[in-house]
Every structure is written in structure tokens, then in C-alpha cells.
Image 1 (cartoon, rainbow, N blue to C red):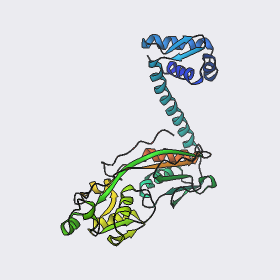
Image 2 (image 1 turned 30 degrees about the vertical axis):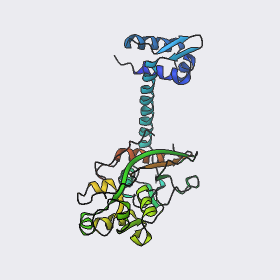
Image 3 (image 1 turned 45 degrees about the horizontal axis):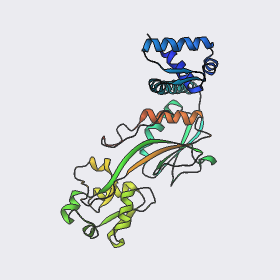
Image 4 (image 1 turned 180 degrees about the vertical axis):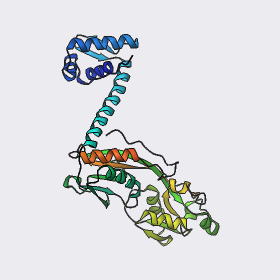
Length: 303
């Protein structure tokens, strides 16, 4: 026996606080709401609510049930929204902002977005930090670093990864693998010169003498290439190193802090059709085939 209607009814009572409010929201009589709860509790063999003079309060089981019901309700709302989006004709410009080096991770979503909505023109911008989204500088932004706290932004985790300090085996064969800070200070290092959030890169900046930083670049992929060619020791993502067995981590302990990539929209535009459509494409395309499987990923929540 399907109990979806009864479960949804319980969710509305918990959400709105009273049987009368739930009845109004569901468009049914108060007696119908009470009858549905009685049926649900009888079928499950467990109490969902405690009845008292001020109304209803959830039992421990009721809390778990309502939490699951909330997920189902939000997913249903999202599905209905997507169905409406697919029937709409979207057009105009859509601006996607990313830090340098990260654009390839969002191309698949752009491709799917334009397949569904060919009249939308997508503009990609490489930015430092977070653009002024309230001024229309971007419709959606990808940002690496601590979670932004601006109250007007909707901030969602998209993916996370670890980075470390690595050297190619060819470099190690020539120069050795430093096992201590004094040893490391005699080696050749690359430094990401941009101010992007990267704890391992900050370790290089703070601990290695300037004369031993022999290569700098503001582009992550250039640093990766320099390490891959055996030129220097440098900071790269664990997922890149894991894909190449000839690039081991250096022996000296270095902070390896998880870096999170956040997806950011503005609260005033978060529910607009183009933003919702792009977020849907981003979630559906994901990162399949773009990163090593050992990369630690976080699932983007429902939007």
C-alpha cells in the first residue's frame, strides 16, 4: 500500500505546526488530515505525533519520517520546476565565472545547457575572487577557498579535493627527495604566484627562500607541467599526481588541507529559469571522466 499522500500530510503538519494549517495548504478538510495520520500510524505500527492540548509534536520516529518526507517534497518540487523549464524558451546571455585553471570542469555543463537552450549565449570569465553578482558581473560563480559568508549569496558545495607538494621521479633521481625543512631549502621550487587559496602553496611561500623559488606562474596548469617535466618541486592536486605513478609526494610533512569549490549565485537570481537550468545541467553532467577517481568529491545538494 502506497502511503505517499499520508506521509506528505504528516510533513505539512510538522512544517506548518497545526492540523488546520496543513489542511488549508493541502486543500482538504481538517478531518481528512486527521484520518490520514491515523491511517499512517496504523500501517506503520508506530506513533508519529504526540497529541496534546496545544496541538501535535513529533516523536523520535516522526522526526526521522518528516526528514525523509522533506527530501521527497523538495525533489518533487525540483522535478516539477525542471519540467516547466524544459517547456520554456530561454534566451539572452548567461555569464559563468571561474578561477583560472578550472574552466574545463564546467564545459560539459555548458554543452548540455546550450543543447537544451540553444538561444542562450554563454560567456565565460576567468576571475579572481567573487565577482559583484549583484551588479550582473556573473550569473553563477565557482570559487575555491573558505565558504563565502556574504548574506546575499546562495553558496553550495560542488566538489572538494586535496593538494600536496610533489616532484617527478626524474627530479628526485637527480636531486633527492627532501625529508626535512633544511633539506627542502636546498631544492628548486615552483610557486603559484596568484593569490588563489592553496595551503600547500602557502607553505612554499612561507618556508622556502626566494632564491630557491626558481619558477613562478599565475597559472596552475603551468606549475603542473613544470613538475611533470622534472624541472622543480611544486604544489599540484592529489588527483593529478595519483594519475601519474612517477610523481610521488615529497617526504617532508606538508599541510594537506581539503580545498572546496563552491558554486555561488545571488539570492535575487537563484530561482530564475536560466540559473536553475544551468544548475540542473551542472549536477547531471557532474565530473565524469574529468578527474581521477581517487579525488574526494562532495555531492551538490538539491537546489
